[in-house]
Image (spheres, rainbow, N blue to C red):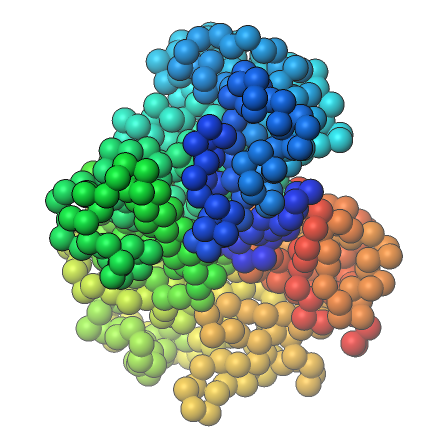
Length: 625
């Protein structure tokens, strides 16, 4: 699978099948081969790229089986794009054992020309005991091993019920398949157990092969799409569009409404200005079923379009925050998500500002990084000064009084930012100066935060302008760029010297370039982080232990990258697991010889899995020196 844009674990990507590419995230509508009333043209007009149908239903219906074996599943359901076939696992869960075995149903799917073939896995229910779920996990893996996975795209469902360790184990084992559905979740979706789903999705995603599509089986309601995509789901399937239509329910992105209780269809609906709800109620059942299904599918794909746009503009996390207030079960799921450590997969910064609502925002990934750094920043035992809002006005130049105190002492300086205190040197670094705040502060939270700081460093006191030394012992600007460097590269070392020349913008006074001997070491970006030059990469390569902040490539690739060309995944031989997407990296060989500098497109934990696409967007190659 190729990835184009990402935000955390969410991505816009491309997955190739024999009948065409699928751009993710997307939804596969469930097509019942016995009830196929939407044409391929109607489906594609809504945004459908691929569909899913059930090979078990086809095989057990003699007329369908005969036609599928003769003409193929694409002719059978009249769809010329990618088709995934399910195996009958869900029917087995609902009705008991089915009459076909795993190998038999997999071979049948191959014979009828399915693009994505699903093994007959063992459905794990939320109420299953640990031993039952464990047995199902291992039996599902055994069934994957007993089929030929080389000649087709094989879907190997990740099972494990609600047990985190079993989901982890299943994800690792089933990564041998080329397509990774998360199974056994329909009962949780139907009972709004979204918090359990968050745990299942995260444990499945971060322990599986990142290069392979992740599919949430049965996750067809748009209310939970954004959460699922944010946590790494690429593809959904949905029968809800027709199930709701049969019950005269009208689907919207935030829920459903009864056809008899709505006044009109929304403007985006294919039924708008064509039918009124009253007219549709009076229509014959076949007409009503088709038209409501079209509306419901449109609602589903409206949400997918919005999610893709949010990924592109880096506001999906914010969108999920907004969605979390739509239903108590979603809010509970949001809180559960915040309990997981997904910081390693999140970008260094985002294109969009960060929204501050209240003290709950402090569970945000970017602020948690700031708080973690603040802890290490004051752990040196030096006296620490707290500067309140009135003394330090964020968004304006730091006052000359504070600068004088700072430069004539070696104290730690923390400034108040919303409800917490952070290092003054990070005044322009994302998300500090890129935040839009509600202004709703929690003094109780501030008090508890200060107490937490004092538990780390007991020499904390409030700042006043009389605190200063006799002479300057450091420069604020130089200490600032070294602090940003330490925050960005997770190191205790300094990169910059006091003799380095800092170029500032005449218009804003912000730092632009840092030079040494007329050579640019780094440029400060608009988000307050540093972009390295190749000269800066050489300096960094000498002070940071190997393999920290490095992507190691083959010699052939290194020669190519040294000329300033990008690094492709397939040439990577190793990397630092702690690399953040969007952060600066050095491109070296396995011995640490530098080829280029650039920024990583994915995290270090993901980088070893991908085979297609660009891993590092190179700024400069060593040949430029």
